[in-house]
Length: 184
Image: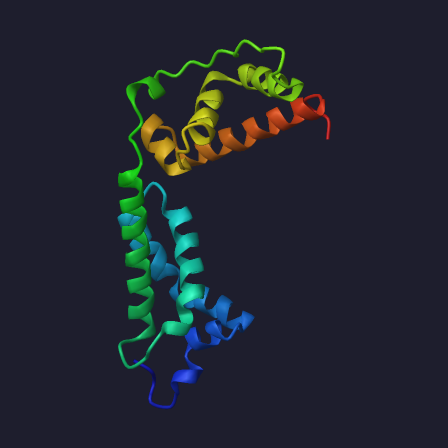
């Protein structure tokens, strides 16, 4: 609940809803640990992405906070819990990765006459990546898996997954632009 000397208009969430940039920073400082701890328990492999979505949702719904119904912390925890449940339900609706995905071995497709030169370059660049980097990039792009899902599926650390995706995309971009490795 609010402190006796504060009005509902003074609440942190009311200031966030009003667009006060200092309130956004204060809200992150005040409730960041709460949101992070709930997200880590709910989605250990994808907590970072979940926390970002939760705070975006919190900014959008800050105007609906009613101090008569509970404290700001309760409101934040409720938004956090609801968002995490939504994420879990959405993931459950996605088709599960099959064993074929884990055994995925990329082969460059036969390029027909009407296939663009850029597509051929991209396919060639993808074929030049290290096998683990290629696999991670294909799971992210072709199969739509999140970094957390890929980490869970492959057993690789989340940071490795993120690095593989980033470096793979940079390599493919450089190949499409004709930039040699090591050039700026």
